[in-house]
Image 1 (cartoon, rainbow, N blue to C red):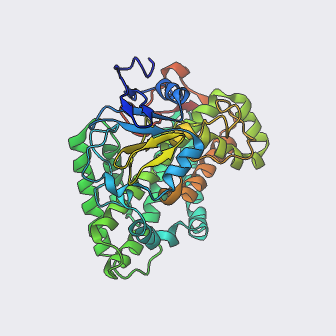
Image 2: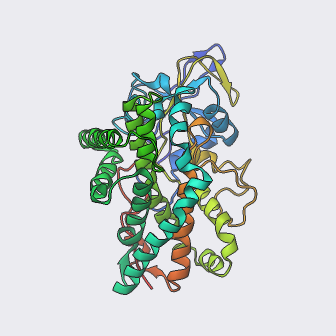
Image 3: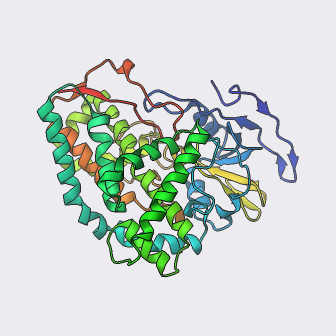
Length: 413
């Protein structure tokens, strides 16, 4: 299926700068494994700036795919996230994942103020403080898997519980509440069920509001304590702080899917697997390359609105027009990444944008990298004869999800 044939093509109309590119309907279908979306590939070939219509919302939006342009748009104050609120912009999900007062829909300086409140938890020092506890948690999970013996579903036994435990500890979520938080996250990220997703979002928002109200001293190291203190000091509105907590919790569990995709790649590329086993020093750069290569999400995320006329990639974007950027496409830009469709574990430099760019760069990037490196090393060092327990063709990827990942990874060793 191509971009032009997915569900019709709307003809472009004339503008002072010449004819507009056609509007391509992008169905954002589910794909197997880490296959690159063919519609995205065709849109990239058509030009650095095209027009798209996604399954939900109204009208069309610009799509920016070139690495240089993606970095420019995401770091340029002339493109606003806040201006999206109240507009039914074309999008993948039937609903907006963040609440309207969430930090995801804030621009600096409001956005900066909210992020500053939790910065101590996400500095290199803050993340390193968690490393020993994270390694201890992972060691316990691995020991249980080895004790029970093969086969095992690594998604169920390692990839889901480990990131959940780490992000919950960082957030300050008590162990007794973690199953509820995990359930809410899964419902929020299900793109097809609007009612369940919205209900789960309200419940999680209410949960973190209550947790912050119990933690107003601001003297803790976890995120809920930091946010509770900022709210009590009048630095951050309570609803915005709770919305930020929801986004951080959801983002923390994205490690599950990214690492599932990484394990799939390594087990289907045994040469890469053997090389990383024999050369541990190569693992940090390999993680970067796998982060670049993995199409970690379906379609695109939140849009921005041009606040004034701006030229991007030779195309005039008018004030008030919506713009989507694709980090997945930017990570396959051949002008930045030679042979972008090839996995090169020694790629240098590797300026990937898997964690975003600009003010909305993922605040938990250091944490996610630390967790990923620990998981990858556990795969390589603790399971020397690791392989799939079923034919690769029998593996199933989650359907209708905003973030791509395997439903299960049955393995043996």
